Image 1: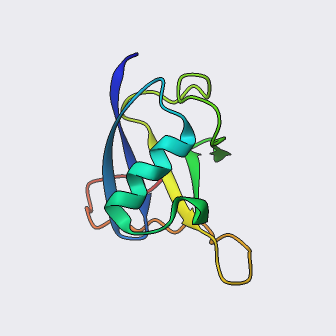
Image 2: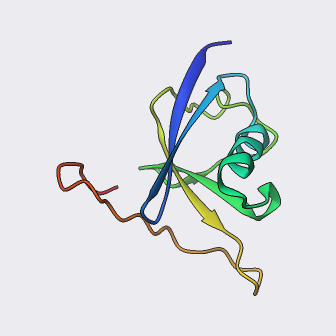
Image 3: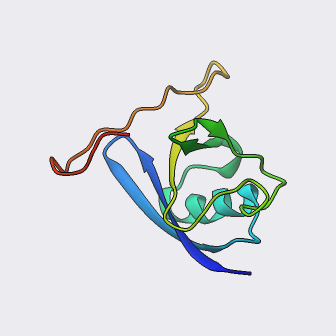
Length: 97
């Protein structure tokens, strides 16, 4: 399994997550829960720029997620719907996703 890192963005926050290509989407969510305090079951990860939603049971390699990939994190709202992707750059030199 290849060691890798992912950039996970939500609003003005970027989480750098170290993982392996054999980790599942659910395992990445568990790592994010430890960093963000948002329960894994209330998270949805979306691969950018394709906007493909990651499957919790499939590995990152199976979903063609590569080291350095950018994921958007959205959370489940009280209504049961998901938030829209809301990424705001604080770095004026970084292109908006």
